[in-house]
Every structure is written in C-alpha cells, then in structure tokens.
Length: 370
Image (cartoon, rainbow, N blue to C red; front, side):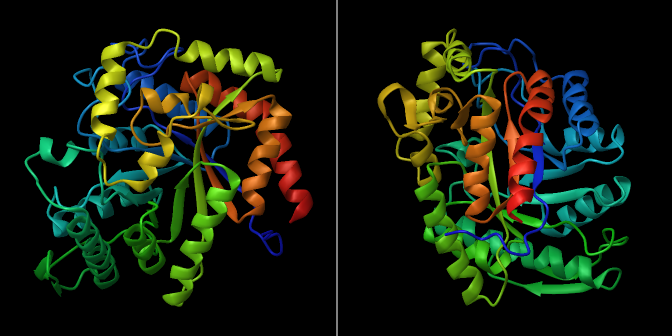
C-alpha cells in the first residue's frame, strides 16, 4: 500500500525522558536523573534542532530503571518546560479518570494559553499491569476505553462552549453547568490515540485527530493502519497516522548494532524482573507485541526490541547507518505515516545526531515521492 499523493510535509518529533536517561538503560539508577535542569536541556536541544513536538509520557512508577527511582510527574513537568521554550509543541500523555474532567479541561486550556497554543493530548486509556492499581483504581479494559471516549467528548464540548456553562451526561462523566474560561487557543489541543485492540482502534477512529502506533515490522503497521482506517471511514472521518520509535544510528551498521548491545550491557536482573512482572498477563495488545521473544531481539533486518526487556511501552528501535535508518522511515511513510516521534539514549546527544545525520536524508527521500 503506497499513499504518496498530496501528502503533507512529514513531521519529526522527539521525546521527554521522565524516567531518567543515560548511555545505559535498565540499570538500578539512571546515569542522568530526570531533574528539571536535565529535561530542560533535552527540550531546548529539540527546539534548537527544529523538531515539531515533544511527547511527554505518563507513568505512576519509573518504567526504565528500578521502579522506585525518581520519576518526573507529567503535568507539572510539561508546564515548567513550556515556560522555557518558544516554538516547539508538547504532546502530553494523560490518563482519564484521575482528575475531574471539568477541572482537567480548565488545566489544559490554561496550559494551552500559557504556551500560546502549543499543547496536544495523547489520551492513554489503558496501562501496564498493576499501574492503575497503584493509585487505588481497579477497572477493566472496557471501562477505561468507554470512560476515555466520554473524557474526549466532554473536553471538546467544554472548549467549544467556552465560556458558557456546559452540561454532559455520560455513564462515567457528568458535567452540570461546568465552565471553562478562558478556552484554549484556536481549535484547542489535538487528540492522539494509540493501541492495537479492537476497542483502541474503534476509539481512535471515532475520536482521534492522529492515530499513533508503536513501531513493529512493516506488515504489522500496514495491518494497524488498514484497521484504523476502517474505523475512521466508519465514523466518516479522515485518518491521520503517527509512529513512535527509538533510533540507534551510527556511521556504519556494525557500529549501530554495537551501540545497541552496549545500551543494555549494564542492565540489572532486578529491573528486567520488574518489567517482566508488569508485562505478564497484560491486556495491552501492543505491549505484548513489543515484548515478543525473538533471537537476539531482532524483529526485522533493522528492528531490535531489546529495549523492551527493561522498558515499559514502546521497546523497539530502528538500528543502522543514517541511510539505512532513513530508508526504514521511508518505508513507514509510504504506508501513510506522516508524523514520527523519535527518541534515543542519551536524549540530548541522540536528538542532535538524528537531526543532523538522519532527518535530512529522510526528508529528501520522502519529499521526492510527495
């Protein structure tokens, strides 16, 4: 499947490492803890390098190092980071249900105004095994997705109605004359949704502005996009697609594979055990795909899922020389991916390396086929 007519210019975004960072991952402690000063360095580097946006995830415990290690809380952190940047956008991961929806809509509108309209939302209905339970919630997959749909509908209604009082009567969310004033800038934040289950794809088709997938081999992504597009079409909407992946790039392919091996060379058994415990029995279809066991963690000629042994959520990287990585990205772009959310360890140096070595080649390849 090739979609190359009238395509928008591809977007490349980066990632905020709220768990911590370093040249090695899966250690007990991060070589670079997630202090505000360090995360500020990451986001300012991404802004200087011309990236479109920054994804900041949400967690309830450290998901890259020992689970009790410091973790930068998402909303507080992004508010501070927005204040020290000028142009770059923030894609903020949020979990419906832990903050009143009416209050959250006010918070998001306020941050959107403070940042002059640079906020988008990655709604995360699900979670890794035991994550919601840490905060005292016990609910099933269906409940979380139904609540997420009402969350998005209620936020949009509040923002569109600002400053008039809004009523919303859902099964999980109710608003009785709620007010959001001021509303967000312009049309407000865009909603990104991911997931590989039928419920996730259905929700994305009905409510997302962008469907965001974790990287997997091309045939798997093609299937996800086809299934997502069926849901977009059923809802009478146009699908937009993004891809989340790690990048390990060096001057030569052999150097890149050596770098991949070194990344995990100090990983601790206890950290691997913690990750395996949260993956076991998870309802997250995408997480199971990321953590599949294959020889040497190679799920493709240039795809490596070794990161999944020590990291929750996206655990697969594109590995290779700049030309090879760019050609891999081109393959996904040909399937209909228009935004790539990238990351690499450590995030400051790899942000600049990818921007200088990979993105010029990738943009040239993609623009030649637009």
